[in-house]
Image (cartoon, rainbow, N blue to C red; front, side):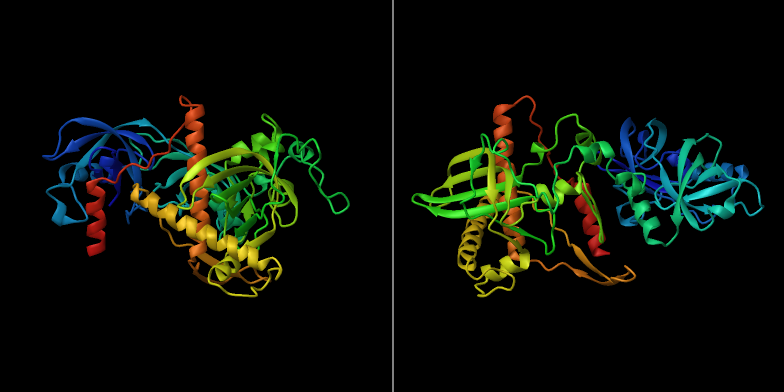
Amino acid sequence: ESQGVIERSDAPDIVVVGRAALNRACSGDTVVVRLLGNSESSVGEAKAADGDDDDADDAADSEDALAVEQIEAGDEAPVVADKANLATAVHGVVVGVVERRWRPYVATLQADVAGGMRHLAVPVDAAVPKIRMHYADTAAIADRYFVVAVDSWEADSQYPQGHFVRALGRIGTLDAEIDTILVERQIAVSQAALGFSEASLREMPVNSAERPWAPSSRDLEGRRDLRDTLIFSIDPRGSQDIDDAVSMRRTRTGFELGVHIADVAQFVQAGSATDAAARARGTTVYLADRRFNMIPEVLSERVCSLRGSSDRLAVSVIWDMDHEYNVERTWFGRSVIRSACEMCYEQAQELLDGQCKVEGLDPKLEPQLATGVKELTTAMRVLRSRRRLGGALELASTEIKFAFDPQTHAVAAAAPKRSLEIHGVIEEAMVFANAAVARRIHESFPTAALLRRHRSPTADRFERLQRAVRA
């Protein structure tokens, strides 16, 4: 039976059961809901989320069947998955939709068996109902993903009415599956759309084998020169877009810790074509076997990538600390750096574990790198402990690594990514830098600074988690 959940920030979520009770609300819509039972009797506004449609009789698409279903759903008692919680569950019916959140949906075809032109588009997102559409040449899309848009949903119709937008590709092919992900996640209309325009590429600095890019004297004006400081990067093996690096050294009064971020803003002017493209993307999107860059590759993988032994422009945060890692002074500013080494996590972990002659590292540089990695790790252990005592939120997840057949590009193996201490070390350094920059922004622009705040989980959600664990 159809079911939806209405999310509320300050009260238990509301369960809506039955197609009639959902009243044509779709996942993501903002709705007005009337509460049922003994819990409450007022009308509240909330957001519909994670609805699912498990009806087995969708093929019986007649207005008579719909009318019967409405009558039966209105007369029956609310149904909940956990009957032990029946007395405390909050149920309701949708009485109106305040705001629709329809978007383009990727779907497959459920053709009219009678050979007509009125078909059903079956969205790949199970939370979205089937969509009625007209289309003549069903043979052309019978085995393909396609994009469908919703136009309306009349009160006397079992399904919303929509129209065909475009075909994506054959179901099961890699490119079609990738395009499906991009559309469903609202990243782009297709892979082709994520290419950069000629206008954007014309704005890029020259960087070729014949003319490799190097900072000019004008580029260096007003920058702090850190090229003699031991700076190194630690990233996944094979990374090309190295956007951050770290430094850690002893001083007479304690330590100097530095976090250095690639200064992309030096090459992307406000209002430029590249700026518009980056704003539209928002981030670089990583998939298992490819990525879609936020900025052109000449920047992300070459000119702005903090490669070893190359002069690069950066934005740095440098802390002077005492011997207990208490911050005495903080410097923020633009810099020029020359990374001594680009390490992968595994190499840095081997240095941390005390291994000598780490494969791939310069033997002459290895002792200095080992000292830097170990001192950085000691500092981050202390800072993480303090952050946790202050009520820090830890978000844990498991990342799956895929190996691909080089010929077919099919998945050859999959395994959880190995967790190393050095992962947490670099993460803590970045969090420390982000917090310092956030404080500086708040001090300088108190009326414009924004805080992303994670709300506390409600007791109702903890109860649902406990029931799920017990099951």
